[in-house]
Amino acid sequence: MRGYVYILKCSDGSYYTGSTKDLERRLWQHKNGEGAKYTKTRLPVKLVYSEEYQRIDEAFYREKQIQGWSRKKKEALIAGRFDELSDLAKNRTDVRNTVASAASASSAAIAPAASTSSAAEALEFNNTVIELVEMTDK
Image 1 (spheres, rainbow, N blue to C red):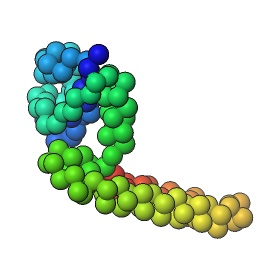
Image 2 (tube, rainbow, N blue to C red):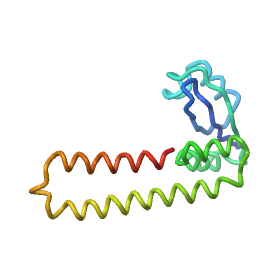
Image 3 (spheres, one colour):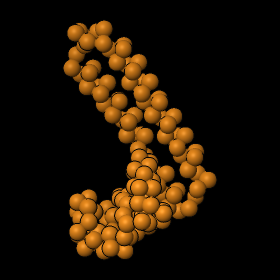
């Protein structure tokens, strides 16, 4: 049975990625508030991208892949700038590796002094890690 993966642009500018066996019916559901909880609160929605697959499990796999992408990478896919997808994936991986390394090094540096560090230092460290993680989603 055929399957589809699709991306909707919501009224708040966010993207929703889904998969279905019947694209037309699913779009009707989303547009009428019967779709996902996410889209129900962000109406109206507009179909901005779709792909067709021979089997629904292939579409579902692709949905999960796209859901893990950054906004910039999704926008490159939607715009048909396929040559950018590889570079955007590398950049995201590089940033994630940098975040993981920084968090690991900072944790190791803070751990021995944990009993003497102040709450303010711990809060500052947590805020730095959060800022680095948020950078990966841009």
